[in-house]
Image (cartoon, rainbow, N blue to C red; front, side):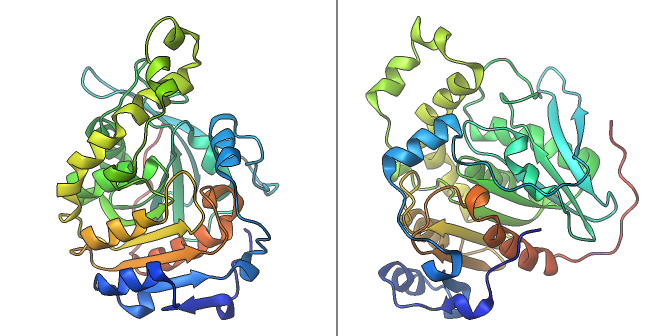
Length: 321
């Protein structure tokens, strides 16, 4: 597992305009952490063009993998109302469940490096979200409630209360889970999570790509991703009223130079998650959108702190297929 930055590099309650807005919103100074560029070795800020290219192609986003036994793939059958869900799993099946939810486009393997060397006492799974990878259905699933429901069914059937980690579009899916399926979410870690509907923009090319014959030319993942992004502004607007219902602790990791999900999303979320058991925001200087792929130790650190607060007795081994 990659080494996390030393705590001496973390500046609590730093003097940044965004940190000031978080404090004004009621966040405690100890719950605002700024990771300095020197701590992560960042030498330049990411460009918008590069991040958009990486989001579509994945080029330049391959994290270092440990040479360990690969995670096992499992499947939860679906029914007429709920699509089948496929997922990767590793770790102790009796331990604290941690569920990773990818962005758009994406698949479970985006999180595979977090399943290489699972900490003792954890059981980690990474899902193929509905409409991606080996999960059903064949059509796009653009509603956040429909994204969350099959994952909630997996948690109810095989895992129980879980820490849910969501990156980018996976962030609002994680929040929908916590708001709508409270019994199965014990904590939330958000990584560059889209949240503020007012900051969502749709390029005219995206609208064009949704119509035949262009839509038929897109690979399944890109076609489904485009459908999700076209609907995201309205979906985030619908989610906003549920954010106040979220009770478990929430940690928000945000790159201050994220060109796909602007850093102001962290303020939007912190303001609306006032009823969460704890709100913690980690801001990363000179960092962009793909923290979970390019700066995995920061995510491990946030997850480790969340897991420490969610420690629980060992559970019976979970049945999988």
